[in-house]
Amino acid sequence: MDWTDAIRLLHPILAVTAVFPLLGVVCYFAWQTRQRRLQLAEGEKSKIPATSGPEHVNIARWLAGGVVVLALLGIGRPLFGKALTDQLWSVNPLLFTFILSTFAVTVAAFVLLYRVRDRLQSVVFAGITAVGILVLGFQDGIFRRDDMWYASHFYLGITATLLMIFSLVIVQNIYQDRTGRWRQAHIVLNSIALLLFVGQGITGARDLLEIPLGWQEPYVYKCDFDRRTCASPPVQSLRESEGALAAGR
Image (cartoon, rainbow, N blue to C red; front, side, top):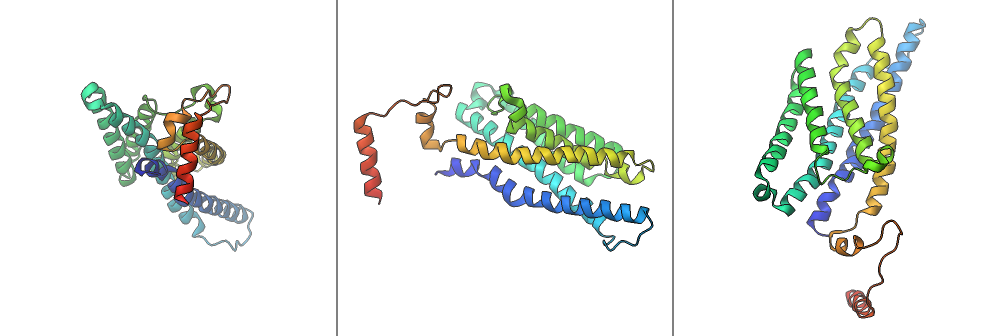
């Protein structure tokens, strides 16, 4: 494994070590918060601490941020990798400048989204972040499985990312709305997001099995993926490989 393969692993490593643990904590506090609210509405004295609600909001903000960072990393790595391989800055400098500036603006808007408190500014920066991720995600070099969008790691991830951005915007609406409609919308949309995260775990594990190491790519990509067959290597090459393995032991 060389450094390019190690960079490819950053996305799944962060997903497993940071995002998915945060998802479990957020779900726990969400359940606690709802149970406490229902108990108080029925006139009961709840044993669930009042801090469960604020903890849910704070950790959910970390989760949403982690998902967006993960999406930017998952899109940026192959996008800039292809630009580096194709020397896009000399072949198509206009496209390279567009991609670079779009990525920079998206990151800046995402950072500002966490800093502003004004509702209109939050909507503006959230919109810029969402549009930037979509524009970058549909550039050449991003593996999307357009023919299998319903089981695509990209499409499931993009949808979950947009829901996380939306959840950051509506936090204040939830607390200020007396009708409870924003809260119900929040519950429904984030329940969908939870299912999308489960799908991400499944499709991500599947895609890791299909991505060869860098030195294997010239051989693997010569295979017939429709027939699921690969050309048999020459006998001499096979013997050389076996000799190299024996020497390595």
